Image 1 (tube, one colour):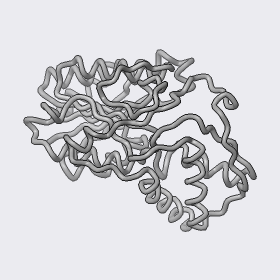
Image 2 (cartoon, rainbow, N blue to C red):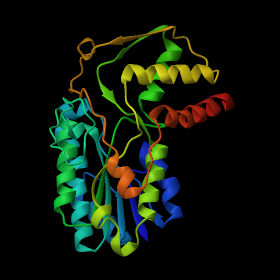
Image 3 (cartoon, rainbow, N blue to C red):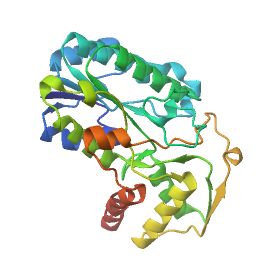
Length: 300
């Protein structure tokens, strides 16, 4: 299997780049070689590498900035996946594409199944949904993995932000009425590798192993609950913090340019049934990330 990975510098891409060489010949071109805003660049690299599997972990993820820079977000999140998927169709390749809980409006209260209607409420979610449609309509064998609240030990994410603020401030105010499931990049990369491993080259993402898949840890929490768990876990690992109080607040007290879903917890039945993956609880999957952060801080 020859794999082309886009987005190797991101949280998920970095984790995938460490794991995918175990199951295939990996090519992970840098951004200047595989420019998602340049169709000619995409075609040049695809034609040169000629992958049997395209793994697209790249995305424009600046949710608030996407409201202003919608054209850029659309180019990266929708047009580029369409180009990759169309190339895959023409060259008998398969595609693994990552998407987001933000394709849903988040106004419900029950875990969301893959086949439920989408209704993005911000530009980021709308561009990611357009990318999903483009991949699905391309005709290429594909798996579109939706995930939520992605984080890791490195990069720009909620865990790193909370730890930084907890070292700088005495008190934090965190939104408590948006509910989801935090997903570590290491776990998503692990199960992605296993899902690919379950299929042969000639039936990758065909039948029950294709289409849409919701992938996140089990359980649910708010950003406030997540922040509290991060700080408590950091203290258990003797990380130096100054924060003394974390206060829950409503979304209305923290206005942002882009609206956020109130509820984006996934139903994980298909992950368990079709791929035989039993997701850990989100609290348990946080521990390895905090362990790695504590190890790094202790070594610095």
